[in-house]
Length: 357
Image (tube, rainbow, N blue to C red):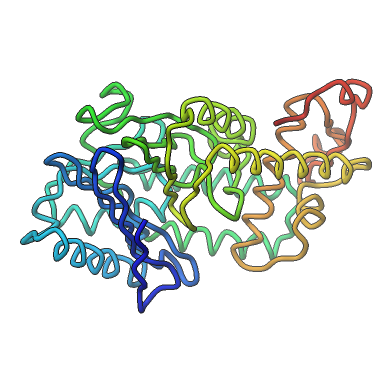
């Protein structure tokens, strides 16, 4: 890796070379205020491939273009846009897909994504309509107060209004989970229903599936099928096996590269094991998901309210699915308008259960 300092970003533009000579350029972009993301421009054989696009918000598209210009100069091209062959999306979240409308006005590159995130691109407005309804219902059941709930919904809907539907040229399972005999794809649902990890020679592009320094955000599966903590932990195991020992570096959508992905997977699983144990402790008496969130993550504001409640909900759901939690106020719920109270149960079984990891 050869980091090149950037004067406009706390993150760095960098170059990498795989064992078979593919050249990779990491382009930093400020996806949202104070929140940075990476796109990767890859030169392999006669192909030029972009992996993820940034959010399209603020200066993000301009920063992506600045990265293209640096690469154009290094590679001696007349234009990156005119020579771009493919845009591969690791998963359909706005900070990874938001630049697509801008790009597709300027390039004829073919766009690929996994089937289970296809509608995030091609039916985006419908997806948001459904997601808003499900999220509002979840927040009510989770016990989030009226004022905080409306604050969350305002922020959520503003961010989601940044994107509009775009066409897709192919999906990964339809092409046999490989492209041009160079890129391989592994489906790793959890953080997103259609998340993939991409392998090129001895490098991985892992999107948000594994991150350095933080554990990737989790949602309860009741918001979107094929997400949820159970799917995520299963996908970590699948990646751990798929990688083997021949991967030199794992490049993610945020934060620095990961040198030992096996060790990082172990660390992330440990984080979730601790949160699950703590959630069981908190629910020794009936509490809401919002109560669990406050005890797990403390008092937070803004968009972090949503993130913390979703994360707590993912852990409560995981334990509930495995019979270690029950709902203690069913009679009240039948009358409507009250949040769900969860309480631990089956403690004698729980002692025999390997909760996770």
